[in-house]
Image 1: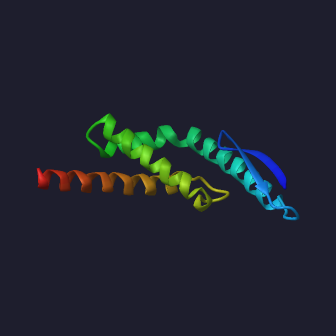
Image 2: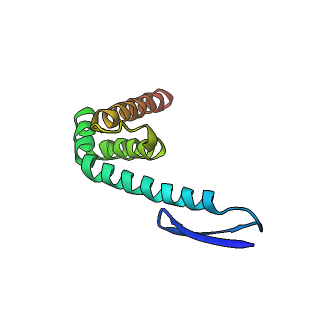
Length: 115
């Protein structure tokens, strides 16, 4: 058995591989995960204020805007590979935020219709 350890999004991960199997794929996954985490961290730090301002212009209060931004960055994390390379990701994030706000409004309308 071969033990391989790595850090994945702040958590230490240990994996045991069968004798004769390669841990190279796992190590590549750990390296890709840390690159992905760093890419997302840079994206978040650069664009959070802009996306929050966008959401504030389209919602009725700060809490709703923050919820939409949180949902937007959750989607961005899951789809970080879809972020445009070599150009500003802001339009991509605006599109995600627009859909998050629309979903939020749709949910509010449904809630009010039931209440």
